[in-house]
Amino acid sequence: MDQLTLEDAISKRRSDRAFDDKPLTQPLLHKLLWAAQGITNESGKRTVPSAHALHALHPLRLFVSAGQIEGVAAGTYQVSGDTRELTLHLSGDRRGALQQAALDDQPWIGGATAIITICADMLAASQAFAEQPPYGARGRRYAYIEAGAAAQNIYLQAAAEGLSCALIAGFRDEATADMMQLPLPLEPVIHMCIGWPAEV
Ligand SMILES: Cc1cc2nc3c(=O)[nH]c(=O)nc-3n(C[C@H](O)[C@H](O)[C@H](O)COP(=O)(O)O)c2cc1C
Image (cartoon, rainbow, N blue to C red):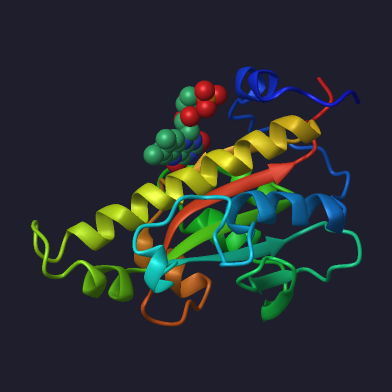
């Protein structure tokens, strides 16, 4: 496929919820993770803007629930800060469980080849901005804004690679955190469902 311009990728960006069974490769997965949180200079700056970055707050954490990724056993993996390493967090296919924790019937969650869940350390984010109004809420607001920027980068990288992608935020927070056995104080914010487009 020819390299897309940024304008092409923005134009092609869509929420596509029908996925093929074809596995993802690890290099492709890493491109998506890099787009979301990759480190892009020697002072630790990232692909996504981050409030309080001078103090290395960086509240986002990525998890990957792998279904069919070549060379990666089904399971949920925590992604290292520089996005290069996956550490097994839970073994076994969790996509169905994440689908069950969704609001409404969203079969594209279970049908995705992989799900990147953008989580946030809301405690650290809230504490960092505790002295600024609206007291207690600013840190959460900033974490949501950062998660949105990370999600958009994943969308654009997926569009550039010809992958299907859909942002899902309609899920029951506690049930999702339980299914993922997220360590406190991490909270799930966004699932990005990824896969090759289904043949039409
Ligand atoms: C905050 C937010 C939450 C969303 N939650 C869901 C969701 O739970 N399930 C879903 O299928 N799509 C969800 N979407 C995707 C929207 O449905 C989609 O962006 C919209 O239909 C526009 O289509 P497009 O992304 O193809 O332009 C969400 C989008 C946003 C921005």
